[in-house]
Image 1 (tube, rainbow, N blue to C red):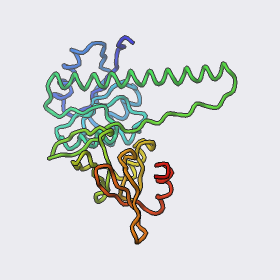
Image 2 (image 1 turned 90 degrees about the vertical axis):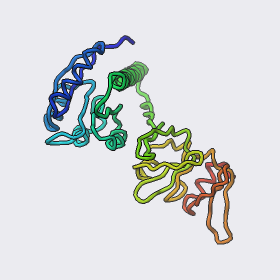
Image 3 (image 1 turned 180 degrees about the vertical axis):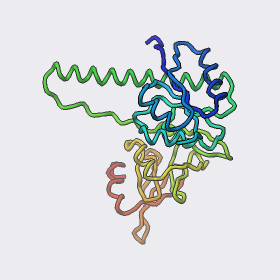
Length: 264
């Protein structure tokens, strides 16, 4: 699919920052700057009116923050979003609201181009998905009434974590199990532990249920990591992982887990 022209909105309260992004976009092919905004409320209005493909969104703006903009528009209605921030800690929030990428000021040409490539790819994938849904609808109409095709839910394939004050991304395929840590959670990956600013309920909903299962209020486990189920003389249940780790299993979830494991 040849690259089509992307319409871009630049939202930042600093004129020099807006110009900086515009200058860099001038070196990208097939780009049109649809408009610029200097505060959060103006950004919301321009997204709704201009319907850009991509928005460079400053996190801290007067009127409404970048996160407020996304809350107002709705994550599902937002264009492909690249957060721009002077504070790396906001990167976690960017991933939480499904931003395509984020740029920490000051950023160089290579980092900018990488983020913009991701945004372009996101737009292209959305177009393919939209065309596929339309084609399925047309085929169903031509073949007569049929049951609607079930929507395929997208699950997380990577999780942003904090490690020594830095942000890194852990592939979900590497996660052995997850435990609650106060209001948030910890990922356990091959002997390493990483803090995650996500609640257990959110993680349970966003992980593939064919791969992960919440076996206790404070434990989510990757099913193929389980070696055996255990039962103590007191009637408590647990699972033993292939690395020897033992994790609690609630009585309410024991039967469901046994079924998932085929009666192990």
